[in-house]
Image: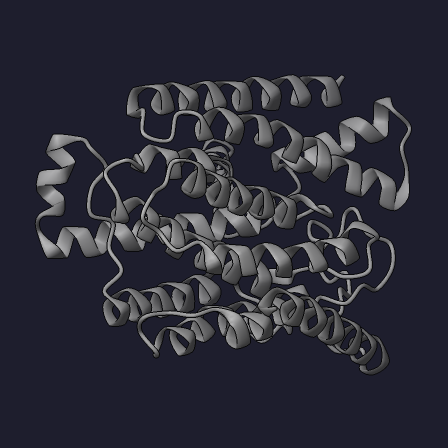
Length: 338
């Protein structure tokens, strides 16, 4: 019965917020930066994050009653970015750090182990554990924002990831409550339908909040049972995490500011490659780009699912994913240059 309420409520607020956004020209993509709207032509509501936030407030459950308030801090940072109140990347990053610090400290959310003895010994120290958890969550949040550039990519990625978690927990009888993941799946499906047809974007608020909430539950899942390898979580989050690392290294090599946006992310190169070679156009090209990347990641998730407790196999899978990313990136750069 709860699922019916979630569907009805989320669909209703999606319609209301989209109509309000278009009428008042509030939370719309105004193409203020070329890198952000390279694949869109019209003013599109950036309401996906707000829809996700409101639905989560109503339907997700947490042991700590203050968790929902703490999550709102993460979302507000993204919302201020979407409304141009935090246009400076450095200001956004500062408030990201501040909000994540407050959350981790207040909720006592920590990564307990990564099954590497040297690092696990360091994780016994509360200060290192605090720093390491903070670092991983910031990488995830910013990486999610980096990949949120074409329709269906961010939403489809975290939707598939959540579904794999539900299936894995239930199939392998892991003592973890997946009800929140099931609610997230429903919310993401509804937002994804509108995003698929180019009717809304998630915005920075959506990218920050979706990735952070799912990261929160994945840490909880990895801590809940020895049968869940932390590298299963790493396999599920490899793409946004590596996109963040790769972007920083790429900009350092080319002597560009890490804070400056550009259009050199993998999904943007794939978009331009498909446009050049397949002559695809408009919203279909945009959506097809996201679907093609998520199809590849679904394959990675499939193998991760079947090796949920096999750390060595999962590490090998992560290495293969990183190598294929680098190969694809170099190939696309060369092809587009020619």
